[in-house]
Amino acid sequence: MIKNLKPCEMCGKHDSLTDTLVEGSVLSVCRKCTKFGTLIKKTDIIYLKKPKKEIKLEEVKEFITPEYSKLIKDARERLKLNQEDLGKMISERESIIRQLEQGHMKPTFSLAKKLEQYLKIRLIESNEPKEKLKDVRIDFSNAAMTIGDLLKMRKK
Ligand SMILES: [Zn+2]
Image (cartoon, rainbow, N blue to C red; front, side, top):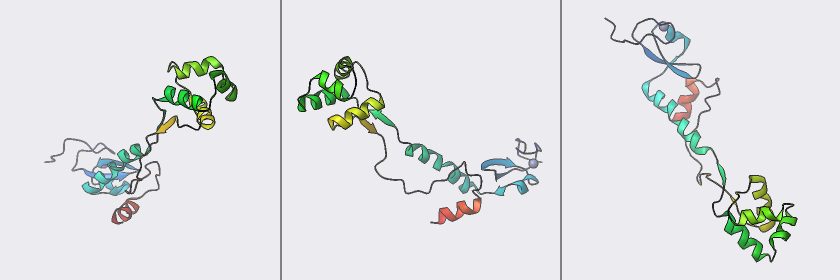
């Protein structure tokens, strides 16, 4: 009797299934179909799945600091400029400056960059991790990656 209730993910046959790496994804396939992929051990599957999260961690997101209105106003006053002067400097209307300083309008990234440059302040922050992750990351879009590479990487 075959204990496995799930059919082979490649041919649909009911047989004892083995986890196999086929074109970058892990499939449960029957003995006959394992020849299409690379046989992998359970530990390798865990390793294959793990780096996905780490890639997400590495995504750098930029955002406008919530303190933007105070920062802009303080910097402008420090430079002894009025709202109109600052508007002229960065070629924006005075009303835009006023709205920014009142916190009624969040600057766009391009506007924030201009303000950063002229006012010597930092408005754009990022969640960039301070320390680079030491673990080897795998590019899953790279179909040329073989289980052999994987095992080599893990030994490092
Ligand atoms: Zn099969």
